[in-house]
Amino acid sequence: MARSNNDWLKQFVRWLRKLLGTSTSRSQIKIVEQYHNGGSASVLRLQDPTIPGAVDLWRIDRHYEGIKFFICVINVAQLREDLAATRGGTVSSYDRRGLANGLWKQIAGQSNILATHYWVTGWDKETAGVDSQGRSYRSHRVSDLQLLAVDLQGIAASYAGDRYAIRFARDIIKRLAANEFRELSLHRSWVTAVQVIDWEQWLEGMSRQLIDSTHVLRPPKSHFPYK
Image 1 (cartoon, rainbow, N blue to C red):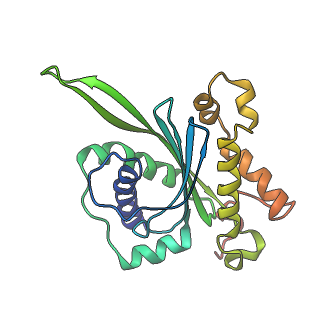
Image 2: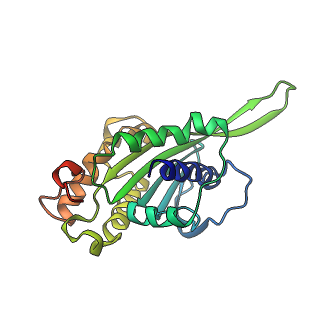
């Protein structure tokens, strides 16, 4: 899976740039749901069939801060099936050094986890500047891509499908958009509060409420030698 995973990450980075508006390439991204929190933020549920394994995509656009936060949930089994039918294309040297390589290292570092899904979060910040000829411009910078390998099915395994993953993503996005999360009371800004969220702790708490009271969010493969 090493070569295929790397190809997927290159494709993921290309998709991510389209998702955040940092690429002029044609995209198949569709907005399937959206609502607005006054004039300060927009919440979008997105769909893009070109991203292997993607089961749910959410983005919060914070208008005053000029920043976008996203959650993308990847089904690992579906990812393998999609990769068997497609190949990733080329990627710039910047991506090989940066975003794609960073995600690849995170996957490799969690290779001992018997994961059903990848929980991926990240940011895009709009910046302004002046070039060498004195012309003003705006650009985007994608940062802080975090990937967590998790089990969001439990003992039901594939029979559970993506229903918990989809519910968790929706519930969490709603709470973030409504400013109803614990970290916000401890930090001055919404952005800082989201940046310090412990996703493992949050997802494990939800899993033990909705999947099973003894659910292990990140089971090590060493405990399941035949899987």
